[in-house]
Image (cartoon, rainbow, N blue to C red; front, side):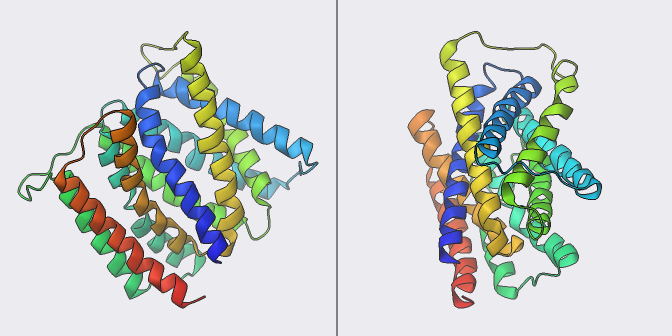
Length: 290
């Protein structure tokens, strides 16, 4: 159990860095094309892994259509809305919006997976939301600064919660590599026609470093990290695993300082500490039940 949480925390740290990576990439590639290209390299990586390990498995018709829904909602729309949002939204604030995922996931898990949504989990989520609100309002509780791009990030949050629920449900009968492989291939195929119709203008960098950065982050962030997540979430309740996403704003804030030279304000530090406090409160529940 502790090993599973350690790996899930690693994934969250990688995904937290992706807010800064995505902010850089959308300056050189249009969002839908960027989504398609990243899914292409992710799918190629996963296909090579499955063939190398001789773990490419066929699924029945029912599971295929279920994985198709996961590929459209949890992969394509999730990544596309993410890059759409990062065109204008601040990376740290975007991470804070996604930190609300545990609340929605908890309710969905209670409805569809019959998981318990405990008082302590609720309290941890409320504390984290206070930290989120503090940062978004920049310490001024009378005015809420909400960029247009954050509406797309809200969609990312919703689709991420759905992805967690569906992956947790499928993991009881389908192995993680098969789930990740099928959903990403389907997400890639679905994205192809949209890459040339939704982006106006269509932007694509011709710089080799930009392409190397795109491929590298695609493989690590959405390939390897997602596979590790899917391998370990089978040992953890979906609602509890999603609470770890509250750590993403802290990671995004630190990476923004290191890579984008984005200064960290006192309000952001205080808000992040409150968010981490909410995570620790929820984590205490997990440890006590092991």
